[in-house]
Length: 126
Length: 384
Ligand SMILES: [Zn+2]
Image (cartoon, rainbow over all chains, first blue to last red; front, top):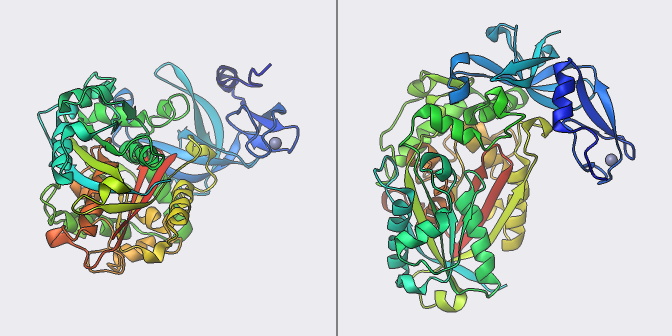
């Protein structure tokens, strides 16, 4: 029985409801998002799903001005690496924050976004 | 393991070509075989790098295609794809094949064709090297990945846009000395800083160009290499990987795969960073050169920008980096880049590099990074 505790599809279903789902290792306590098959810390497979607060701060960011084909109509847009308050980090689109006010350390909050019909990870103001 | 040497190198002119990637590779391979003084029939295997052939040329199975165009259809052939590090990965595996005694003479190289599609298309295809579901859906681009690295490095160490621009100015200056380079014109700091924004804080002149081109090297076991005119010995060749998702990386101001690959290559060679005389490294973006010089141990973490600004990495500086012009000016045909870097270091160690020669170079290093920083290869070379 090696089906993942939280599949990618399940993650995005919950993300659509506004919920960020991680997994916590029942053996060593490590947290992972997105979920992984084995714990990178202790190599065990003892995950429990856990909901994150969605609150974090920007660790790095960029404003994309030359986009790939599928996103050409959206420029300029911001992408940030966000350190979540539980300690893990994720990339996401940043919305509803003026591009010129983006800064490392800026508090943000998770929100689901949809581009080209797919739910993606987004962050907006707290 | 047996000792392995590079005995022949060949590189096409980099830039725009109205030829297929297989034709570009065949030209480079013919030059490499002529340099090695061997007929094509001496080749016992082909290790081939090609990345976006499926997209830009609607061509998979590019290994046997390249071998067929070259006229050696029956040799075992494998295409390697590790994004921009593909032909360097091919090289490492070829060295293992020869080192293990499976073959005595192996042809390694790669080619890429991208200038036959629009920038929007190639930007999309290059982004395939990041995760499809978690990163491509965000509209993340290749420049975007290194923009995140740049912002993190600037925040942690105070690296400036001027320091990044100094890398571009230096590599363009080196490029004027390389007749095979895509760009052979100098640029100024002001031109870099004033160029169009691509992915803040990276501007157009912080980015390497899209390039068509091919590169090839012939490697051989010691017994064969001893009969070659000018063998350059492979002292070490190592690969390292890292998390695919940038979000899984703890510190975007560093590229740990570079540090791990370098440590392994230095260990194999019994050498350290201070032994290296000439470096060809992966400057797909100016910040990538800064972070690589730190990861390879040439400069302390956080001081790569200062080193570029002070000219320590220029020809005639403490440790010349990218005398070929690097990816920035020489160009970056992604499947060919690793082999082209090896060809440059071999040329340097043979004291054959003309106006861009690093005087007295005895030990050379190549460093190639794949895509989103999840693949790095480092090799070390030495002359007799
Ligand atoms: Zn664990």
